[in-house]
Length: 167
Image 1: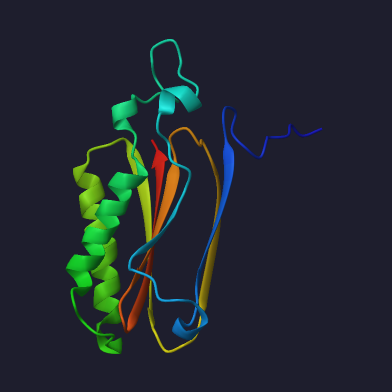
Image 2: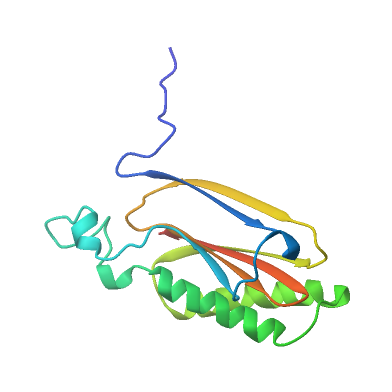
């Protein structure tokens, strides 16, 4: 008989599923940009997550963790710097996408926190059509996370998601 391996790692894990839907402008009332879809807030961590006898949360100090507020600011800054006040221009979408992803990664690397990052970026011209995205992950909910920002202008919809996983 072959030994079996568990599908999930030992310890606290959490299955997170998120969905973001962008509707045609005529289908929903106008809203301020950007709209943010967030994973559950992690503060205060000590009250909600398992803190070991050394005061660590899954091996990390609380100041080493990333908050949704930090991530929100990083993503918004990267989008604003890449797009500015431009209208949708198909010829610039590849450049904008690269600049948003690289901008997020540079800012995240500058935090010098013990995480690996995954950044996704999608642009769509606002023409009246809808867009739906979904994702799921199995991870240590005490330290890992995902944050999604929907940024909109009159002609552009941009959805950026950042995943962070403790090393």
